[in-house]
Length: 260
Image (cartoon, rainbow, N blue to C red; front, top):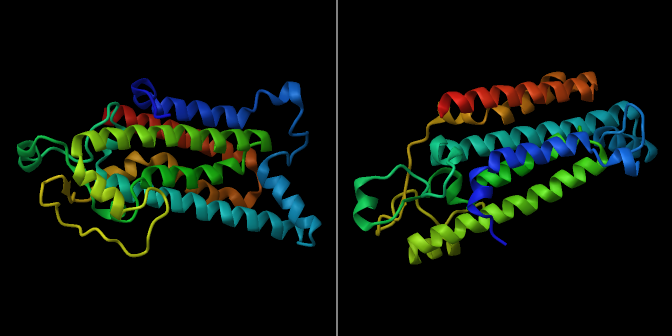
């Protein structure tokens, strides 16, 4: 069930394709699943359902928007925190490798290092969780069938990536990685960590100085989405927000090209 090297190498573009299909929902032309009209996106559908339950329609739109803003900023903040500690070059890397720049210590023991600083002390996969949070906000702008498609396929694809990474790290770090997995949950963080920020005695675990500027640049798509929701969402114009998402994607591609 784990992802292939091809999927890992091209994971960025596969994710772009998943989101593009979610926004366009090309199957709806034949299946007619999402209806027609200005509020055929998830945001409008949920607001209408709330209004039927007795909530003022304007308040209903605001409630759904506020939830989207919270998810968007939470996703951007978590991924930036994770990227700052992991290193943008590892986050963007096209091949599986340890979560740190090699040091003399982990070269001596013959394996990559595993970052256990920042959010990695509380959960093993903060990058994936952060993207899922952001995807919930983006799904508000999609037609319902596109939102379901995106969220389901995103979970399936990223679980495959997760299993590939865990298998790779388990092979190279052995007992040290098994110990880390026993202490740190995969997806649901614990409020109290059982992992100290210091290095593992074997050299398999290590801290990493946070690089916030590079991390924010690497996660510019998520920050652009979050800021767009907060600044322009109150105009209740899903098409405007989609345009902002596309601009954020363009900035992310430029940042990716500059960094490569």
